[in-house]
Length: 51
Image 1 (spheres, rainbow, N blue to C red):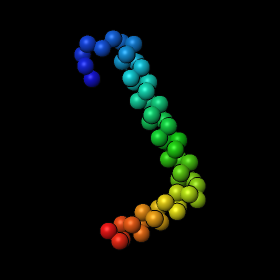
Image 2 (spheres, rainbow, N blue to C red):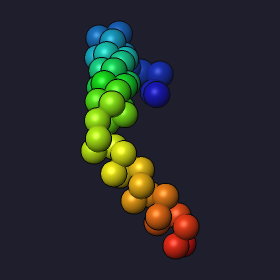
Image 3 (cartoon, one colour):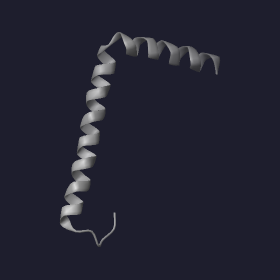
Image 4 (tube, rainbow, N blue to C red):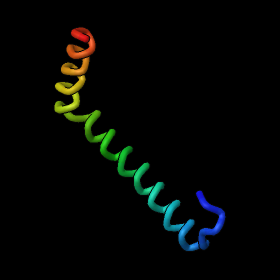
């Protein structure tokens, strides 16, 4: 981060980072609790075995 940023810019930047973290957690929880993620995990396992 640059030193010359205004406080408002800093706040916006922090807010964006926080929102991104929150969104990623939400998506992770949804994926983890769905059958969809089970299929994805299976494919990833199969893919890693083949690699």
